Image 1 (cartoon, rainbow, N blue to C red):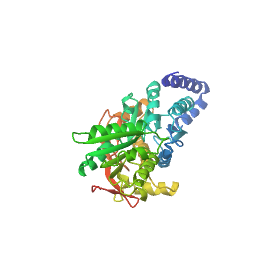
Image 2 (cartoon, rainbow, N blue to C red):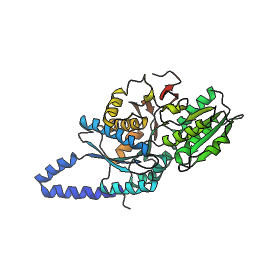
Image 3 (cartoon, one colour):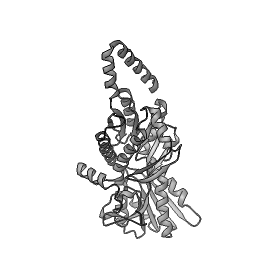
Image 4 (spheres, rainbow, N blue to C red):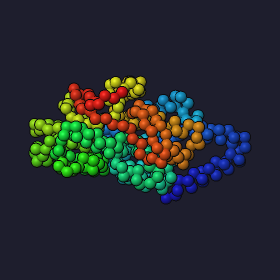
Length: 371
């Protein structure tokens, strides 16, 4: 498979020859080429087990439209090349090769840990940045220097949950986790952070296609707390089954748990946008909810915020793959709708902060006073 740089070199020589040959007409053509859109490859699940991440596409669309309305980046508009990975790593690889052959985007965006890990080797092979949004596994950015992560981390998820448990003085907990890269990474992080002498942690992997866990729940009814880690629909199903047993202990879940009244009382970790006192995202939230007729979740916010972040970094820079990589690696401060943070130089993991919270009447109630 040819290197991306080699492909672009051949295309460049072809254009140069044509411009020289065409004379004045070539100068006009060159001007048109310079105004071509900046393409961004987007390979995310819009169907399959992680289809809830279609909201990521919507956040990206809203942000791209906002950037283009303001004149684009260096006078060029952004264009999203969106494909449905169907939550399938092999399908994602096929789509990457298809997009790369036809479009050669400036960079790519993907989602889910399993899909991101399957695409990571292609980032290095083609020397193109792949940004993982809704990717929590720390293994993703360990693959090579061309992959970056912009999302909440499994470690931060675990720290927030561990903080709640410590405050409640919980010494025994059962962890039911989705048996894939995402659930496994949360389980590993939680175990490292909370395990200590005198504490009992029992972990149970659950297959996505096998979510009837009545037997496992019955075996852990004496535990003081239960922690469920997985995709929103997975968490919602398992929490419902746990509550149906009459379990009287503490129930905790990963961020993204559906904010519905039947999940009242469940503790979680959540980004700042769910805090009703946080005003910095209200305009974007209103625009999103008016356009898409649905609630503005943090997955959509991460798509919006990442486009804002990357376009700010690229303004007044030459636009090529190396520039994108250098900009993300250079260290920066960002004030976005998911909060404010500083990223040190050389960092490939860009995380927005999480805070401990509890669902109450279908809304999130933050446990600490913030903003």
